[in-house]
Amino acid sequence: MKKGLFITDFDGTLLTDEKTIAPQDIATLSRLQENNIVTAIATGRSLYSFQRALKQINLEGNRLPVDYLIFSTGAGIMAISGESMIQSHAISARDIRKITQYFDAGQLDYMVHKAIPDTRYFLYKSHGRKNPDFQERILLYQQFSTPLKKGQALYDTATQVLAIVPGGLPLSRVSEIRADLFEYSVIHATSPLDHCSSWIEVFNKQVSKSMAAAWLASALKIEQANVISVGNDYNDQDLLEWSGKGYLVANGACDLKPHFTLVSSNNHCGVSQAALMSHLLAW
Image (cartoon, rainbow, N blue to C red; front, side, top):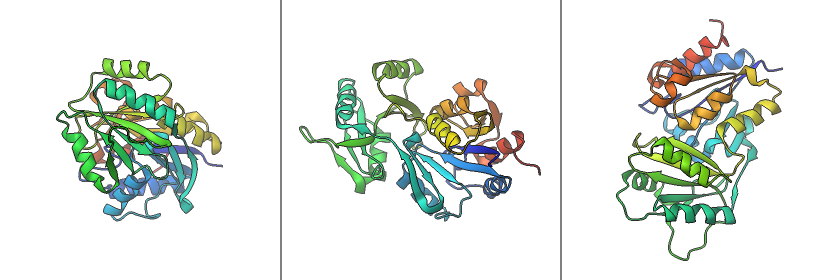
């Protein structure tokens, strides 16, 4: 029986600012597996985006010692061995219309991502204001993006609707959006592109990193107290709070630092330090 579950965020936590993974952190994940600890990554990236990132650093396939991938902020879970999908959630056409109408009313630029496994494809709508982060993301995935024209049909199902707000949003405004869209899971994150803009991601009510982690831990018969997590941003907060022990890397959001145990930054092997501090490894 597995002794525990170790979950790390990807961008800004395991991934360095140079878009690499430190050899020490790779070795730590491998040692965890040898010590009968299940390893997982919980990322806001889609499956396609995550796999592309690994390919760019020559770690595709099973070369990264991770057992499970929680992707799209918990909308999907995949077992790395065999690349088998074990859980996914979507929002309906009715939900998509309701969410996009809300963002239209607020003049927020947004993207509608197709349901898993085709999340890389998205429709997008701009309200004409300057939004460099929004435009950069369109360019990044231009072969998968389609402008949403007036009267155009939306998808039958979607993984999420993502609004991008330049310059960021105050937490009070994020709380208002959550209250208005209470039927859904509203996740706030800092853009991994410009590290400034706010991303407001709207999912099925059952989606979050913590709910995915809880489902996975239950399936593996691992107690919540034996789940360790590491993150850096607002979309990790619920996971860090839910885990038996949650660690925040030094480059994490300042608002979160008083609430979690701090470890070294993503550029200085904070993931490895969290594993050591949680006594999962005996070096």
